[in-house]
Image (cartoon, rainbow, N blue to C red; front, side, top):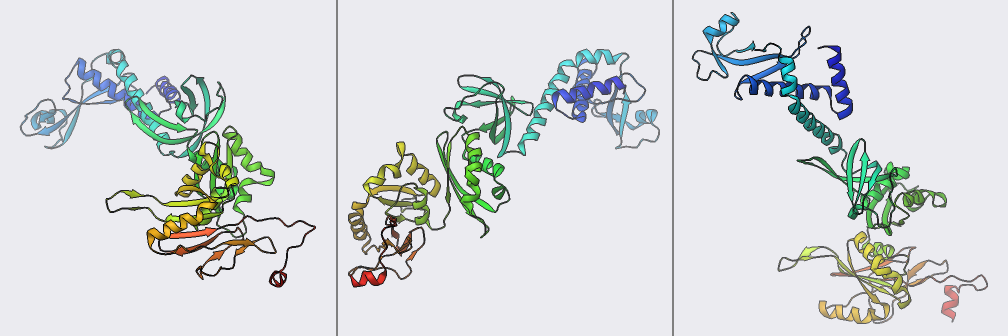
Length: 439
């Protein structure tokens, strides 16, 4: 091959983002197709090679050596084959140079469209192979065009469209703006590979946290669940795999610098970090922050199918004081909706005054009393189990932690009560247990 021919192939590789072998194969296939059309027929096996010292491609007709020829398009008799190559045997494959005189110029015209088509196919396959292994990754994109329902982006030389439903509500896009997007899936279509990218996917928040927070990237802090209302608010539950690392502190960073970098990338969307718990009651009460929860009843602790084969979801009843109810529900139900997504529990909100009636109804339906553990604040301001009043029962396994949550297990229901922590003023001293009994 001439140096100029090699240089042309390298230029095509650079422009189309394909390999030299793909370009050369496309040219060979195009020339072979053109030869069949101009000189042969579609049944013939034609190979094309570029030999050193020759300006034009070499056209080779391939046939199988047989004793008796049945199809002349791809078979040749042993007698005729020995005239071409004396050492040939039956069953061998023989190639014959059938290059027409001056075919290089003829092939260039005949094969032009085929070559372009093959190059386009090679380019599409190359792009598909490049992005297929990068699904569920964070990509950097540049805005090239803004339309009412679409934003056109350039990602590593590829043009990708992002529909309005994948755009963050209220975010302003302009030509030249650099943004990060989440690559959900890559699909091969008739028009080439299609990248499904998103700015609203919950995993975008996860990938940004991995990018900004070394502890998350190193898996010292694990992201357990994410609930997102794109453009407005996200809740992220995290846990620590190391006893020396505070998961919330690691994610927020000093003066909130780490979490602020994540929020800036998603157009100022608020990101709430909460600590994960395997105890569903504790997780639910934490997920509904900043509202103070008074009680939680696990009505159904696991997903299952009922007798008619219908799916029954996990469900919990949440009780709050009237003043806390708007905060617990959130604007347009956002807070309780995000908490539902985060905990995977269907949450029903009730006023705290409804707890006795709800508990009695539940006990009537189940034919047994629903056990309750209440909490109060001790001298150190921590939540402890309140003394059980006469006529009620409480499990000896009821527990409480410093966050003021407790669990009592009965068949099919768990109930916990949390009382609000009241701060002791400096001028007042909290009464000791001895003083309480004396009173």
